[in-house]
Length: 78
Image 1: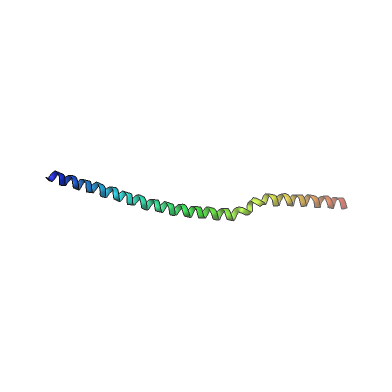
Image 2: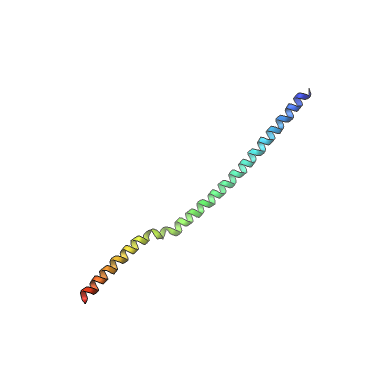
């Protein structure tokens, strides 16, 4: 009769350990999700802050063209 009590106690201990591990995993997963959300926000902010840099090449090309044309006009006037 005492063997079944020992079996029940062992079963309860195993179930409690498994439940504890499950709770720890769920808490860690929630923490990871929160960190991923923060990282995504930071990356979106960085993208917004650097969007203007992509137009810099066009601006430089336009300035070169204007400078070249002004130089040609100045040389033509002298």
